Image: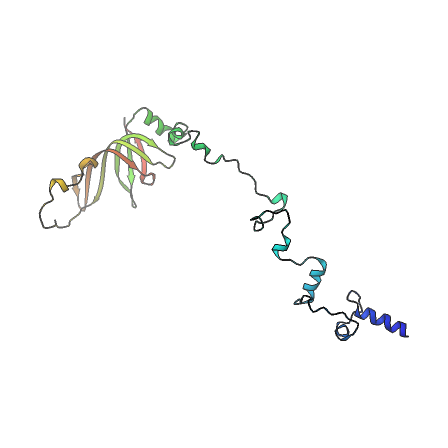
Length: 220
């Protein structure tokens, strides 16, 4: 009987046994206690530590062959590694790929615009505002890009705007030295219809943004 009791007692104190009695193990003199043993929140966490599935600190998991500064990088499996891109980067600048070279390879409407530029054909560019057609510009195309931004030369611009009915400011008229530079083109009112007026001006060069371009027409 004594041998059976001792064997039963040993099994009740064995953690790996199915007959383990945790309450008996706490008060048994045969249990070995370790004051430095880690404390776990629940049994599931303890089982995870025994099976090796518990996450340890990142510093302990860093391999010995990892260099300084690489411990914070995310670990990928071989099939999860980033794919190297095929784009040459900024080397295209050294190869001469710029706006001028791209204009030569333009197709479709941009290719037709390139023909007008090469043949020095005058075009009429209808411009738009937030509500509709603002006016038009007759000029030669000097350069353009895929966003329809236009560099124009020898420009004759016609546009309409609401009539300004502000009273003239009082005081001494501005001297010719303080007047605006007329190289940008002086606008002249040619017609007034109701609350709108039509203006014209001639400028040697103009940069027109693509968002303001509505239609481009060849002038015969």
